Image (tube, rainbow, N blue to C red; front, side):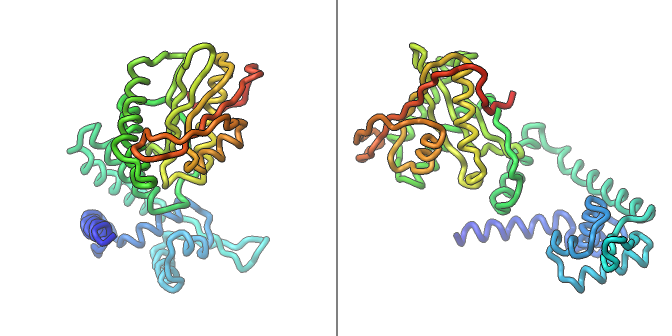
Length: 314
């Protein structure tokens, strides 16, 4: 953890300097960074109460009051009274306040644009994903919404690598497990049957949050493979959505059954399968991962393929 702490602190020092967080004048305007942030929140939320701004920005009440006082002196904000509550005084921007906000907003966009101009399109995408990922890791309340979409080029290999890392950390499954995952991913790409098979990715703000595969086993049987959800994205219903998507797709394509193989130790996945109608039909201890592990075969009969409810983003 010490190394991670130092890495975060190093980035914080760089970014504080980079964005001018301690400059007396933010981007050459008449505000400092906290004032610019407050102005942004008022513009985004208006009409807004002072206590709502305090909660959003986690500011000391007295400090917030002094900043709002300066805004009033500059003629940037107006406070109103409501009939419902005479004590409540919602805050809105005046025309002067809106002009001040627009100036700061444009300067920020211009400064960020200058940073991005020296990066290639791919590097800009990498930066956006990295920043979103950092925010999602540090803020467990960030972005509850997700989408489920088909895989893109390069993501099948990424999924295989990510699963290998996750299960090495959580279960101690090393190169033997990685070999099986890589073989499964390579076979999916090599033998991919469009319209009959698919890999779906759960996406939160451009960050991969999980994935699942469905493959054609022949004779009207499909197989669900390599379900995983990233640790930062759990408890959001992503695992359920991925499996439901597989079930809906299989029904739509006329499969009669879905098989899957999992491990007794993967309790969260097993709960999803049971909740969505799969049944464990056999168990067997194996050594595929280099150590004794109890595997389980599960099955879902698809008796009625007509008009299923499913979740797939096109």
